[in-house]
Image 1 (tube, helix red, strand yellow):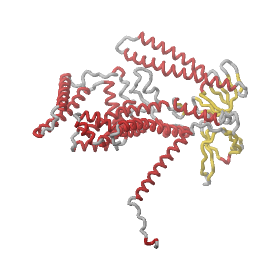
Image 2 (cartoon, one colour):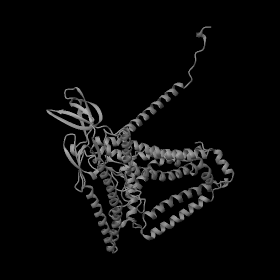
Image 3 (cartoon, one colour):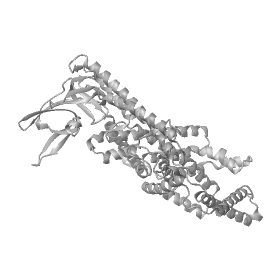
Image 4 (tube, rainbow, N blue to C red):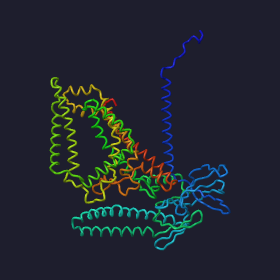
Length: 606
C-alpha cells in the first residue's frame, strides 16, 4: 500500500504554546544566570591579587617607567577618526599620582616586564602603594636597608605591632571613650536640675586619662618610617603604623595568591569602610541590612496574619471588605518613595517627636478622664458583644444584625478614644524632653526604617496569608467544628498551622523586597557612615534610635556619589554580590522553615 493513504500525525492542541512558554522560561533563566555570573566574576575578581607589571613608556623625548596591574583593555578613537588600543592600569599611590588609575596607549609602551621585589601595601589612607623598599628607619635610631636579609622579618614585626596598636586605639576611642562620652552627656542633662559636678569631674578626668593613652599610642604609630622608591624613581616616606598588610605580587605562588585572596575577602567582610567607602570593609552595612530585614519581618508578620485572618474568617463579605481588599492590592503597587515620605512624616516627626517631647496640645484633664472612661466602656461593650449573642436564631436575625452593627461601632469608637487619650494626655511630657532640642527618636533611625518597610510589604503578607487560609480544605474545618471546637480554636489549632507554609511564602517575598529597597531608607534612617551599630554590648544593648548603614544604599553611594568612580567600581560589584548572597541566605532560612512546616502539616495544600 502507498504511504500517501496513511493518516498524517496531528499536532497536540496547545503544543506550540507549551514550547513558547518553555523557550521564554529558558531565556529568562539564561538572563538571570548571566547576570549573576557577571556580578560574581567582577565581584570576586576584586580580591584576587594580580601581577604587577613595569611599563617603559616613551613620552616625547623622555623615557618614563610606571608600575601597575592591568585592569582592562579597550579601544579609543583618536582625533583623526582612527582607533587605538589602550590599557587601563591600577597604579595606586594616589598621594603621589593624585589618581590610582592611568590609561596607557599601547603604541607608547616600549617594554613590559614583571620584576621581582615589588611590594603592594594596603594603607589607612590613599589606598594601595606599589613600591620597592629602600630602608626602614626605626624609632630607636636603627636603620635597616631594603636589601638587608633582616628587612622583611623586621617589617612584618612592625606591621603586626602597628595593627595591634590600632586595635587598642579603636578599643579605647570607640568603646571606652564612647561609653564615657555617653555618661557625660547624661550628666550634662541631669546638671540642669541636679548638682552633679563631682560625678562630672570624675568622668572628665577618666576621659582625659584615656585620651592621653590613645594619643601616646598614636604617637607610637608614627615612630617607625619606611622609605620606598616608586617606579618613576621618586623616593617617599611612609609611617609603618599606617600600613595594614603587604604582599609581593610577582614573587608569591598560586597558593600565596589564594591566601591573599582569602585575607582580602575576610577584611572586606569584617572591617569598617575607609576612604569615602572605597577602601576597607563593609561590616556595618552587612550588620545593618541584616538587623533591619529581621526587624521588618518580625513587625510585618503578626500584623499581616491578623489582618488576613480577620478579612477571611471574621469580616462579613460585603462591599466594605471588597474595598479594603482593593486598597490592599493597590498599596502593593505604590512607589516605595511614597512610603518613605509617609514614614518620615508619621513615624519620625509624628511618633518620634511624641516620644521625645510628649504632647504638644493636651486636652483639659476633665475631658481626658471622660475620654478614658468612654474608651473603657466601649472596649468592655465590644468584648461583651463579641463573646455573646453569636448563636444564629432564625427568629432573632434582625436583633443579631443590629447587635453586629453596634459591636462594630463600639470597636471603632474605642480605637478613636484610645488614640485620643494617648495622643492628648495632659500629663505626658515625653521620655527624652531633657535632651531637646537634640532629638532622640524624632530623627531617622533603624526602628522607623524597619516600620516603614514593614508597612510597604504588609500587602504582600496579607494577600499570601489569605490565599493560604482559603486553600485549607473545608473538610478539616468542618471536622474540627463537629468535634466541638469553637471558631477561634479551629483557626488557632487547625487552619492557621495548616496555612503556615503559605504564610511563610508571603514573608519570604516581603523579606526579598524589603532587603533590597533603598529609596524609603534614604529619608528614614540610613546614612553613608554610621559611627555605632544598632546592636552592641552597651546598655540597653538594642539602640533602635540609631542610624545605620545598608548594603543597597552603600551601592548607590559608591556608584553615584563617590569622588573616585574608577576606584569605587570594583567595590560596587563586590557589595552587589554580597547583597544578593545575604538576601538568598535569609530566603533560604525562611524556605527551610516553610519546608519543615509543610512536612509537619501534611493536610495543607502547600
